[in-house]
Image 1 (cartoon, rainbow, N blue to C red):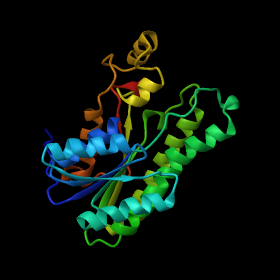
Image 2: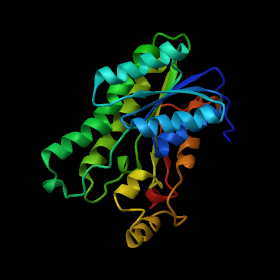
Image 3: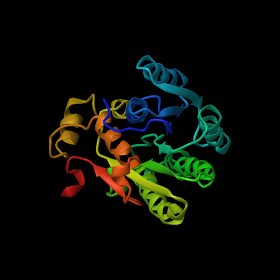
Image 4: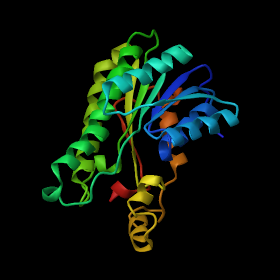
Length: 256
């Protein structure tokens, strides 16, 4: 159960159909916020809403492709139309990208990864800022980056490049919109037990899993709720002086 109180507030979460995004949406609802769950996975998105509603929370699902400006604008409009405002936005939607050396990445694969993982965050942030700058008390944006936004990682050049870009966008927007009462931060998770890792074979291949776990000081993968807790903290009053931060939650992966 969440220890935060966001009663009467409204949150939007992209990539809310599974993994970290679902956990963020659920914890926001447990904290009293009304939640817009955005994703391209309709079944997963509806499942998230049903989970929230079964626990007494309030949520709505909207199909949102973050490569479409119209879609992200519709997501923000849904928050305003359904709940009257937008206080918190978590730009979490993303894909893992390919698994080739930089020189072997197909142009189409490179462009897809950048378009979803970086341009999609920018599109979402752009739409969210249009509403938040008009609100008397601003708002809070959290962009989902990665430890690979801070370090390189073999055979992940498109993903690494996109996540480094997310941190640059976060730091710049934090300075640009602080005067409007808006804070913009990022979270950099280590390797987290999610569907993305399962599909990449990281959590299901025993040898690969052991290798990846060994890169973390606690010799395990992280849990989605551990990242959601960090996101909600950044949205809380406890983080009122935190802006432009890339909060790393990685069991020491980047400490070496």
